[in-house]
Length: 421
Ligand code: IMP
Image (cartoon, rainbow, N blue to C red):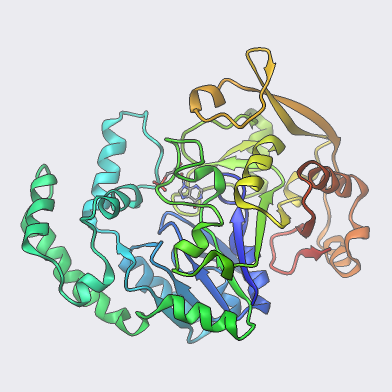
């Protein structure tokens, strides 16, 4: 029963959408278990691209998806995505957990408000309301799909929220939104069902199920660069928790890394580079936020950070994406450790104060020339040995440092531009 979890090992945007679409060609079901519409998973489809925020990207390949209770649902975004995907690939099978919490207008407003009152010193959130939706969930005043379907909204709860949020959100506005949500949820009512059972029955039948993680390890609420993190768990362990199955039902953790580092929003990025080189990589790699369009910050590959991330997730296999984006550079830097106050850092720093003061220790590796489309096609056909030698050295350097095999390598934007090893 192969339950495979795909996890981004950096700050998100490692290329999970495309990789999930590739791996789901041989899967029966793909599952989203965390995050919300703050995620943006891009899937190349012929000459165009599809950007999904709530449906798992792998659905374009296996046509069967589930969304667990660990996901914060923006109902209108979900309805739009189902429509768009079905227009492109036809009918899909979908199961949505009745326990999933709903992102309300009040959450989006509060997200923006909290960012604004920090006057440029905020987290740099996507303003999709995820943090406030999590505040409601953990404060036990959230609204779940099932609560709306069964009309389980007590007046006490409503009064409590109104007085808590009285500054902006009147009781009337809240009642109105719930009324509108009820008619929106009617449109997806037929998809609401038991996600754990759907997953378990596929696994028990020996089918492959892909658990498509959102965001990245360093944005994890507990183990990331707090407070510059997202408001959910982004680690592999969330795959079981976020859908209601046991850890024992997961068989493999696949860590995805981009050949360099990126980050959107605020917070430390030890290997950050700026100027012309960062701009070149940003443009070549199309490094602009899939949800907000913000330019992503760029940094060299950071093996010290990746080692921490790989241990947190218990990664079995690695996938490297965007190697083509680095082509054309004579020398490539790779961070192999940090120094702080003249001493070598042993453990990944727990505070942004310390993390923002570290100096990366770099190894320098040889770069490679750009590959033409014909060369990419030829390499994909011939396999790993046909890759340029410096590219293989780069991959093997990562593998040796992290002591985890690299099994899939992406050298171009199309789904098929990958080499299995
Ligand atoms: P939030 O998740 O919108 O609250 O944003 C918190 C931080 O996580 C911000 O720095 C966002 O830019 C970042 N973030 C959230 N989702 C993603 C994602 O899917 N990819 C990359 N960064 C993300």
